[in-house]
Image (tube, rainbow, N blue to C red; front, side, top):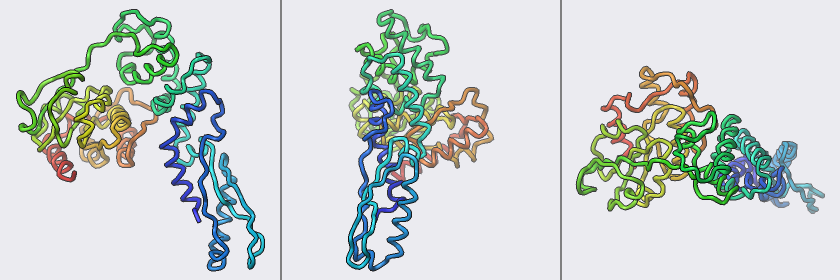
Length: 380
């Protein structure tokens, strides 16, 4: 007999695995509520189970009767004729709407934001097929607040109307949009432009991102142990580290201690997720160390979306509490939902957001930072 608690756990698994597809379905089905979620068999008891523990069976049935009254939850019942217990009506399977599963998973805000974003896109471009774009970028769309959705629509509309201007990204003439905003949301913008206009990219020129590389194990790379290279050069490197440490800030990268079989990379802020395209990075154990602020956690979440096994170091509540006296105000904290964080990381994020403070990674003294890195690497 599967319990209501079991269904809640299953609902969370279904949400994590399938909600981008459910949101994509809303591009053509405005309510996105019909037939999106499969049924969960409940394994109702046999008559022999009923005979052995009738009270447990009765409690199980009553629990499903109560749970069925939850908005968006659907339970299918079947009547059984038993020799010793007469006619019994039992729940046999259950399902829920995407909104119900989002609520059970604590993701109602993400789902609602995603639906609102899709609705706005449908209003502006009703004939565009955005299904693939929404499926691929659902998590980014679901993280946008209302102001960012307005910016997104303005940017996409301008790029669609001006496909080949030769402008640099910094010259984008859209009110309220700066280069860092476009850097953070480029993948979403490009996917939507492709779905609307069939054009790849934004058509805007940008300076090629160069990544700083440090071999923390001198035996891994011939030549200089500290250098910069673009993404193509990074892919071409003949190196096979067991571990890769991605740092948010270049200053910290330069002060890292030697670590066996490890290469360190400057993640270049929100460009970090493209490192998933580097084969030797994708094969390694990857850790990320960023600032303890809302943007550091946002970068971590986006990086984990691209590299699901990435772990964080020195981004926990203990690190914050130990060095909180070195924190400063975060002038414009990110208020949106940040996905792909662990429970421990969410706890640290909550502490950061309590006073809108930030602890830059350079502020953590080198000795305890080096000890924590060595300990984290030894545990792997």
